[in-house]
Image (cartoon, rainbow, N blue to C red; front, side):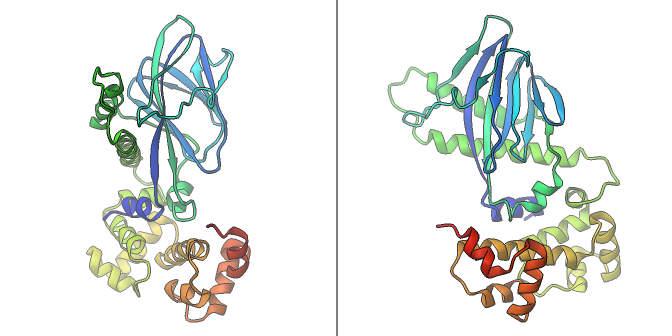
Length: 308
């Protein structure tokens, strides 16, 4: 499995279709900030603009805009129109059906689909930290767009029977759209970049990332990783540092600590057991490393952030 897939799997990534809207000019929608949900908008027909802290972005048919850090933004045409709240448009699906929404005046029409994404942020950190505040991708021609349109169109059918599995289908299609958008974004990055996204694009570094993300508890050595990806020990060490901007084991140590942070708040395992999985021979050494990374020792982290 590749590194992107491993991170999405481990971070328990989920997706949903929140809104299927047709808006006629003038219209504007205010989307609030969220710490738990990242928003994206897919333009199916027409045009609009999105305004976030990074400025305005124009969107046309087939374009997908993702705001990975959940910041507040406006979407509309024009953005100077009186804004309605996003929450006022969202409707709870009835028997799995997401009914379409209409808003605005009588001008040019735009159909846009809003999507929400959630994950465990500690485990998605390699991806989230590498993404800019706004990710814009042209998904024109992506099969998932037509599949999603077809799925949403089923609510308008003349059948008296409900569309069984509608919510699950929309969620899976939203995930497909998101993964397709990320893949296109990464593949379009210019050569010579550094960091996690650049590593995904590198044949050998990408393989090494997939291994350490998917099997972080393995007793890895650079020699063993090099043998598995097809490079010598020194060649992999040099290439990884050049592309990622840090040595392999600095990256692996940080990833193991992120997994440990999640395990502390989602399990009742002892600190000693979690320390061993993170590659530390003693709980004391683990505690010092954890405090440097997260600002507090493991026991304090667990008490403050414990989730049911």
